[in-house]
Amino acid sequence: MMVTKKGIINRVPVNQFDNPRPSGLNAIELQEGDELLAARISDDEHYLLLASHEGTASRFHENEVRARNRDTRTATGNGRRCRTID
Image 1 (cartoon, rainbow, N blue to C red):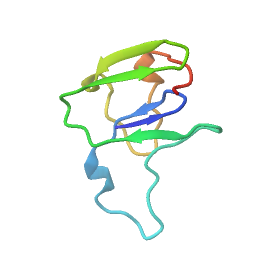
Image 2: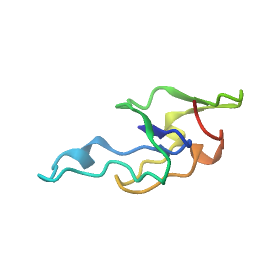
Image 3: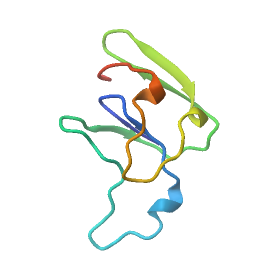
């Protein structure tokens, strides 16, 4: 599970990192000005809480984020926009 500063969530199966190339692998596609905030191995038993500095927040189960390929972009906050995460 990866989360960016602009609220992009990407859930990638761990087996997609089994065969790295000598040049490496792209784990997530970042937009201009975005940065990776956190990357964690998920066990599908927890909730995510995305909160902004302005006080908006969204809480949802990690199973609500659909698993995707490494270099694709998931919908922002699973359709729940929190603006920039601080």
